[in-house]
Image 1 (cartoon, rainbow, N blue to C red):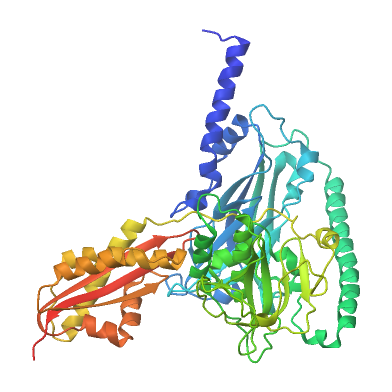
Image 2 (tube, helix red, strand yellow; image 1 turned 90 degrees about the horizontal axis):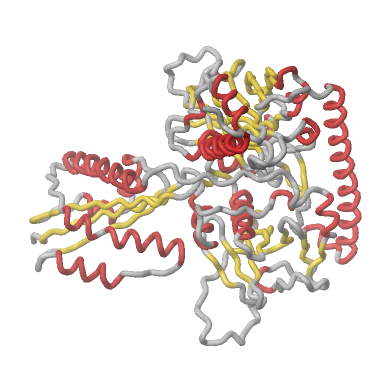
Length: 601
């Protein structure tokens, strides 16, 4: 039976829509706990994709690594950790499976990324349109040791548009990865790549045209950087003319990333929308506080006044960073939630460099956000004696001085007589208190209009399964520990279950500041503990799920040691675990150790 042209067209659109629905699972493999992207895509599958959609895609296939000389001579089974690769381009991310560290690591990942938006009725992007896409592919290499600690090995920006001039729109190449920070000029290793445009261009672009376009973009970028540097020098001279003591204030105009590239600090901030992964600014602050903390690593003595500002993908791939990286991510998320947020640079009490986030409400209220803990502090002037008695108490913030505040579109330097945070006014529109940079100059320098930032990836664990697994593991290690003390272990499953509301309340308090269900929990415990028995409990929080480390840390607290090693008559032991999953493989783990017993005099 033959089909009419209208029926054939309708069938074709339906096939295209079906493939478009299936494609995101292939271009966003990072959402899976075990991403399927590390297996090579067959050429037949690529042809099917190219024939069934109206949008061009770039398949980047990492075919392995070589010349990782740091691991030369290492046997494959030696416990030296693993290497993993993270890729990002045009708000799409992909991760490789971990590969054992070796001189020739088996790093393999296929990244199918959409190069332009469109639908079945849109026009296929031609070579000229693709040549105008300036977003490179960012590649982050991370090493994870046997203890689970991560280390940034290399960060590389790949210019992919040379594939547009290759016959068949395919290009084989090898890239040399460089180290980071003080080792940014040292070779780390080589990755073999295969790039394929799907569907291929009918006629490849002239190689000289591609080279000329890339060279033109480099010249324009260099000119923008030169003009902003000239403006920044003039602005700084004006700033010093206001008051000579301004030279000692912490006003940072430029920052250095992990590759050693210098750019305006405003380029480090850009609004980030967390889609449905985070529901509120408070939850965003909680998420950022769960990311690990890292300190600069150097060989020998070093002056840490030049701190590293890692790119967002490097920070997220490592899962840890320095204080300025935490603050930048939190500021990005708060901007994404529509708040008037700024990064603040200054110092804490003690004189060390520090960064935090500030938000200003429509009424002019200033709130400080601590990215390391998720705490908030209401800014009150030390001379303000007219605070209403109805104002809720606020904890004292730890910040001592402030030199400048900025976001993706504004930069302000403090020109008030004092840099003491408690005495500063944060009315940024007051030019007698804050000296602003030109928004046009910042925009021309690239602030707020660079490549699309990497999105957050959804949680990769099932919190219920993870809670049960860790709880069972803790039961085993607790029983073993008590056995070494010549103590038997009797578990109280009912008491274990009743500890759940308390753990949920602890996490809710960290995320929102509210403390619900306290009375109900206390009443339930009183009803289950027999008369003449004593109840003891010890809650503790972690951001990892390693049972031995959990128990070792908990036993360092005398109260927990008394609970776990409880002696007496009719001793019953309970342990409850609640895992709360957050984006980027982060989690909040709450553990409560408890016991009931009858004292024996």
